[in-house]
Every structure is written in C-alpha cells, then in structure tokens.
Image (cartoon, rainbow, N blue to C red; front, side, top):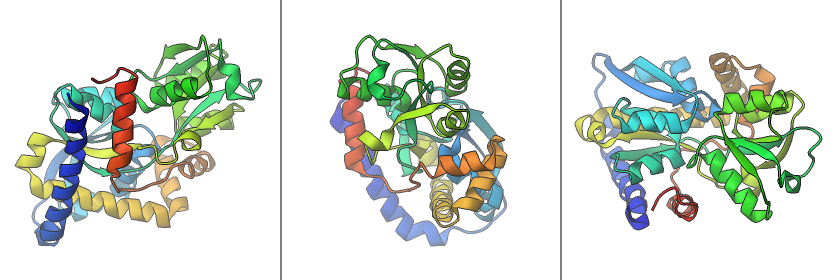
Amino acid sequence: MRVGTLLLMFTVLLVVVLVASSIYLNLISKGELVNIGMAVEFNDHSAAAWVALDKGWFKEEGLNVSKLVVFRTGLELATAMAKGDIPVAWVCTSPAILIYSRGTPIKILAMTHLHGYAIVARPEISDVRELSGKVVASSGPGSPTWLLLKMVIDMYNLSDVEIKKMPPFMSLNALLTGQIDAASLPEHYVSLAESKGMRVLIRSQDIWPNMPGSALVVREDFLKGHPDIVLKLIKVTVKSTKYINKNLNESARIVAKRLNVPYDVMLRSMKNLRYTYVIDKDEIQKLINLLVKYGVIN
C-alpha cells in the first residue's frame, strides 16, 4: 500500500465530509429510531462517545445504540473491524491506518482527540534515559503506545530495551507489582498509575505536540449504504467534543462513571488530552511515515 494512497484516504474523505455536511446535515429527518451497533475503546479517548451516550444525543438524531462493544485496545478493535464484525468505531488512528494498509476499506470521519499517551515507570526511575537495559511494556506493534516507545528509544539513544507486549490493564498491573520497569500507556491508565505512586517520565505531547489520537471510523460499505447515519454520527461527535471542551468537569464525571474510575483521576487524565474533531492531514502523514519507518506498514 503506497503511503501517498493512504494520505489520499484522509484528504479525499475530509473534502467529501465537509461538502456533504454543509449540504445535507440540516436536511436529515427525524423518523423512527434506527438500531446501530458500534465499538469503543475502554478509556477516555472515547470520551465523545461516552458523553453522547449519557446525554442521549444519539437518540436525538434517531439512532438507537442497540449494540455497544468495548475493547481494551485499539489494535483489538481494529482487528474486529477488519473482520467485518464492527461497522462503526471510536478507535486509535494508527491501528486504523494499519488495517487500511492491509486492505480493510474504512474511512476516518473525524478525530476525537490528540496525544494522551505516556511512558510511566517505577518511582525509583527518575529519567527516561534510565530505561536502557530495562523491561518496558506496551501494546503491540502499530499501537500509539508502541509508536511512542519506539520514538523515545530513538530520540534518547536508548539501548537494550526489552519491549514486552501487553494490553494496558495488564501493563498497569505488571508495573504496580514490580514485574516490569516501565510501561508505555494510554490515558486513563497513565493517570491511574500516577495515582498509585508511579512516575510519568515523558508524555506524547512532550515530543509530538499534535500526535493524532483516536478517531471516529466507519467501514466503507457502511458509509455507502447509510450516508444519512454517517452524517448523524459526525454531528453527534462534533457536538459531544464541543461539550467536553466547555464542560470538562461534568464530562469527567460521566466518563469516570462509565469506566468505574475515581473522578479526580479521570479529571486529571482528561486534562492530558486535547479533544478535537478536526483532521490534520499533515499530522496524519507524519503518523503514516513513522509507521513506515518502523516497518509496520509498507
């Protein structure tokens, strides 16, 4: 899959969505509820979805979320989407690019946030340069946490770092029980680890201020078959994202309840993300280039 072709996926879609939205968004009729199944990640990266569900905004647009599948990692969610099990998802961008590069026809409709990843270590490790020769956990190749770890290894010339593949909840447990030295984690797991006395060594925004986070993604056949529903999903995502930015405290209470996380931890976590629905094709291209550099896509 050519890198230029991948970028075209985002550029063309952005134009189509903007034009379609301006023409049709206000023309969608309010009829009977339409059942829809979708998937989210079990973290605050999917805050736009959690808040919209809590506020009933999907139903306001005539959509009944009859099936909600929750995944622990973006890689797992993207794999399910590649199999055709999931037509709509809020998922990390890099796994979405990964499955697209391998032939899964998907479209990114809107971003949901930027950055929101960090490397967290045992408290006795005070500097990222001390990770040479250490065991660091991360989700699998192509995940944002894996990508962050690879960038940090290169940037700080770290050597002999043993990367252990673990989903975030297992990485957190392994870190707290001393089985590993550090972990590259997504929020809200970063803030959970910090609340337990672990040390944040570096955040994604420290080395990449506009690192793409998660996005609203649909399968292409769903987009072609249900353009009206897709426009409603975009509308809800935009509305929810704006609400989060204006009402962060209330949004944190909603997401904390959904994820069964203490409110203070969730509020701290969500302050470490920048919630946005805007697709920046230059940052997406940078992400694609890094995935190529590290051999995840061709």
